[in-house]
Image (tube, rainbow, N blue to C red; front, side):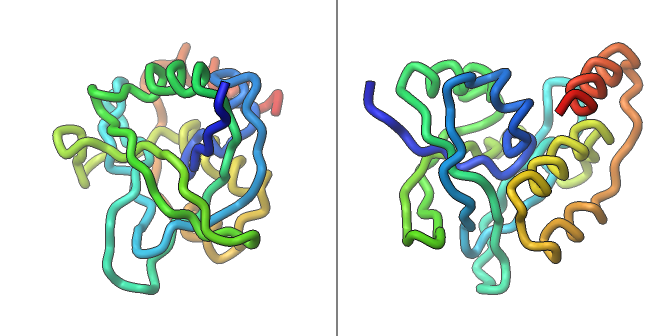
Length: 169
């Protein structure tokens, strides 16, 4: 199988969460996508805000994330998990790393699933923060994520399940 690069910038940065979805993937580098910003405006299946990236021509905006190496079969599974065709679109992006520029696929919210009024659940924001800490993203960038408002998940079972995963990480 041909290896592929995937750029994770949201909850998939969290190693324990991502390995449940793609067990054989390997984190290979941290990188950034220029002229984009991280927002929590993707309508999730649970009605809350999930991460997406928004193109912004200002050179001051950039999204940090993790490059994972994975195989073709895993990409197909991840497409299903991410909801390609029903919430996210798979796109190719150029990522800047310490090793140079690399092309990777990532997921960006479809226009039909983009809503700036959305707020993430606290456990979802915790996944994003955990991944940012695990991969030692810049502190100023982590601080911006910490400032994102979040809400308590009204589904106690889902909140508990995700809390267990977070505590086990």
